[in-house]
Image (cartoon, rainbow, N blue to C red; front, side, top):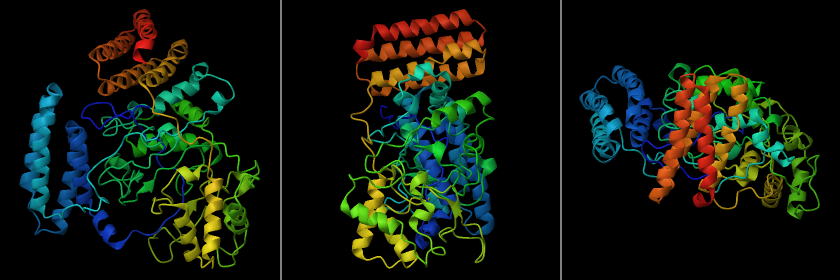
Length: 529
């Protein structure tokens, strides 16, 4: 898929629907970072800066939340009441400029947006907040583009010879996975989709939103930014997990709280990203699509999870350590006790390793779900909050936490084992997706039209058409030739006309526009290449 630039008012072509299924566990936050993270006001300013950089009009969705936090700030620290004037000026400026921004995007980008960011900075200084750290940990530079290089996606039904266009429910799920329209505000206006975090069903290690991300590769989805009604009042950054093989990795959620993938998907849409209650067919299609995600083939392991002859000598020595019981680790468990090789390296259970801070010294709320090790070589960083950068750091953490007594050579061997278990053939696609590749995917989305028409499902017909139109328009920023731009605009216009006729109940006219779109695309296929 072509990289979607962070350009104001253009589709970014992304999503996070299941953004946070189980990975692992991690260190407590470092004290100095925890102090900065704990400040709701600092986080809100970072988020405001991020959202103004992308889409000033969405600021109206964020302002009430920032205002509430300011009220709380003033109650706790009444001497720091400055900043109200500056923030009120910013609010009025945004409200007055919203309509103008819609009419004149270029002017707003060059002038209005710059002024809004300047007002935001004046408010920060007036309130007395310290400047964001310069070490990049809390950099205001956002990144919600697709992962690069593009992960290789393996869909089971394709590997068995079927075409996605022949499987309407799966194709519909593919469309929904790549549609911001199933989510609520502000995610929808920011063009966030499942594919934002789970590019091709894998991960996005560079993903970062200031104020919401503690580090690249994850964010806090249980705060007030995306879904205020479901805010848990705690900053808990979670790393984006790989969704490959997801049908084998139940239960879902960091603490394994949800047995059903369908139920978990609904929770993400409604309570993490503020979406309306999803249509049952959309939920079914998303689950059908994700259930086709396969692990990367790995010739270094057999079907039962044991190493093959292709594994290195170091990995084979590490395999023995992996199965070795340690009396001091969880009453004599081995690594393989939880990461069972013959069960996709999971045990479908939860364990408390003492890495999640409890609400009291004797609380029992730290258990997390066991993650798989398959394809894990390509899913760094590790642990549930992404606090460890490499598999070698994971081994060192366990060695220290449980006093395993592993020497340097054994640490290296166990790391080699984990890396080779986590390998896979051709983990990344060769080259980037071309314009035609992108449009071919939209053709797959459109293949669901006849199925949805046959069951008179106008709501999902419209969702499909509007998603396709957005994705087509999202390609314009990547084009250099005016003729190509005109062609793409014409294609998007035909799809939007089809949706308009659909809304008016003129099914024949809607279908004719879709056929015109298909003919126009096929006629210009070679030119678009």
